[in-house]
Length: 251
Image (cartoon, rainbow, N blue to C red; front, side, top):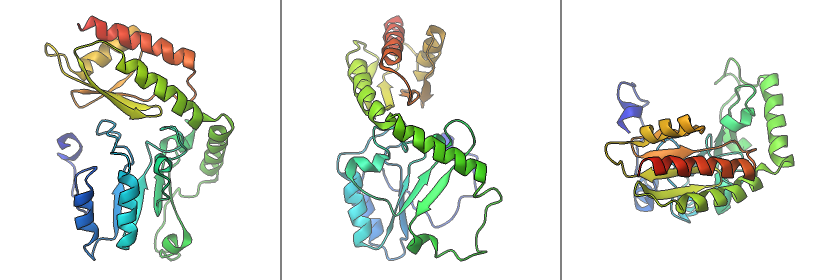
C-alpha cells in the first residue's frame, strides 16, 4: 500500500514481504535457513479486512514449525474477542510463538499493548539488553486485567460471533449495484464496493455519517465496520437500517 509506505523510512533491513494468503510463497521463504520468523495478521485490518482461506493459518503455522521459524501473530486489531473468538488464531486452533496485542487490551481507558511469548523465547533477551521507559506500568497492567475480565464475564467473544453472522447476512441481503463483496469474521467486517458515478467508499461513509452512523473507508473501494464489542442486537439492526438507507441513496 503506497499510502502506508511512501514518505516513511528508512525501513528496518532484513524483512521480506510476501503475498498474503500465499502458502507457496511462505514455504519458499521459511526454507531459507536465515529466516527467523513469520509475522502475520490473522485477518488483515487496514488492508481492508482481508480474510485468508480456511486452513491458511494452520498450514502456515505447520510450515513454520517444520522449519524452525517463529510464527508471530499480530492480533492488535483482531485479538480479544473482535472476530468471535478470544484470538483470531483460535479459529484454527493454533498457538502463536509470539503474540502481539493492543487496542482492546486497554478497554478504552489507558494505552496498553503487549508482546507475549513463552520463556524459551522471551528469556533470550537478558536483563539490561532491552528496556521500555513505560513498560510494565502498574496502572496499565491493572487496566488490561480488568478489560480481560470484562471480555470473559460479559461473553463478548460469543456476542461478536453471533452478531457478526447477523450483520454479514443483513449486509449480503442489500440489493445494490455498488456492493461487490461482504467479508469478515465476528464484528470485524467490510463491504467492497464498485465506485458508482464517481462515488467512492469515502462518499458512502460521509453519507452514513450524515444519517447517524460512523464507518471507516479503507482505500477508495472498501468500507470497514468494527462496532463496539458491547453492541446489542437492537443497536446492530438499527445500524443496518442506516446502512441500507444510505446505499439506496446512491442507486
